[in-house]
Each structure stands twice: as C-alpha cells, then as structure tokens.
Length: 83
Image (cartoon, rainbow, N blue to C red; front, side):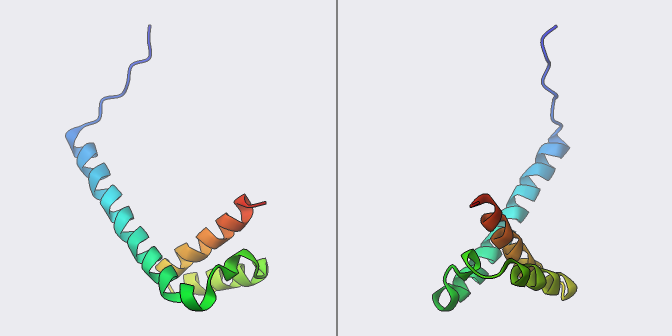
C-alpha cells in the first residue's frame, strides 16, 4: 500500500501560518539588531574567541535578551558550519 500523506486540518494550517509569520517577525528583529552593530563590529564573530561568544550567549539568556541570544546562537552556528 503506498504511503498516504497526512491530512492537515484547517486549524493546523492556521497555526503554521501564524507561527511562520511570528518567526519572520523574530528574524526581522534579529537582522535589525545585527545591522545596527554591523558598521562598528562587522563580522567580528567569525574570528573572535569562541569562549567569548558562549559567555555573551549565556549573559543574553540570563538577561532574557532573546534577540541577542538568537544572534549569538547564529554566530556560534556560523562558526561551526564554517569548519
């Protein structure tokens, strides 16, 4: 018997749509924050000490600064995938 695709309910479609737009809003805030610092700091995350990035991430989490925390997660992710 062929694999059947799961049907998605109207409620789930609505939730997915809403979540997608919430993610886009969050991403827009991340980009705005990165570009606010970009002229002064450029892509310094690509060469700075990993321990520094991790400390900054922890500080952002402790301070509940979720946009900067997400940006530091991106910096760490970018460094890892560049290896």
